[in-house]
Length: 356
Ligand code: GLY
Image (cartoon, rainbow, N blue to C red; front, side):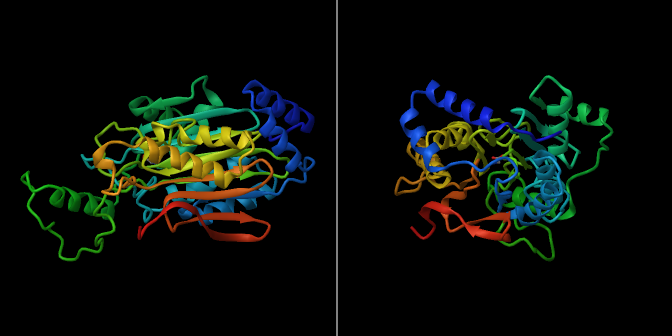
């Protein structure tokens, strides 16, 4: 797949879209403020959630060697999908309440504006690769469950048990301790319990990775094992285009980790890219969607006594001109970046501070 862009097309499409939503004042201001580089001179950049440190490094290397931005970010997140010690993604991901690992992923290619996704996929550790095949070889965007598994096997993916021994013990600990109104007695039957309190709560860890190449083309992917101990068949935000990720090659990209249900109810990544289209800085756009989520959260089990949301939600934003940000509901927190200055963690901006 080739990332190519005609700069004149880019500018005219961008301005036309803005006129369509009647916010040309803001956009005109943003366009004149952020004059875009010529093709070949955009600042190459890859960003990811905190667990994507090595993913950004690998994707950057691939992009600077001439690989397509989507191929590069997928290769990056495959490192984490293949890592049995990351319990939020792929092999070693935490299972559903029945002890079965179910994976969700989406990919989006800026230059073609095409997307692919799979949800509730079992036994295949690289759902991002399967999502890319949906994008490339079907006229669909999202394939789920047994259909997604059959689709992956048709392309030669081999089934494997994704529930590692550590993930199985964490799941069993949850079964033993999450309720005193069932027949699972606590404590769990392990001589040593290496997992402490870290996994006592439910986790919604995920990896998102987005890239910009020197021609100004962008792509992104999000991949996850979803909410730990979920009801079987539950699908989160990660495979939903506009929620788990979104890229408009003329404007920028956004991806998400954290409580998927809150994101699904607000379609945050699409909203954030639209805010960037209207001239907002990536950081301000991300904080604005977090504010919307906080304002729209009304269920008592999701609110603290002081009325603030009791869950985590984070966004990773990259604009066409190379500005980037990580934002999170509860900070401090960090995200990963690789660009000409190297690979590093940077602090995310946050709506609320954890000690508050
Ligand atoms: N954001 C991951 C999930 O909720 O499934």
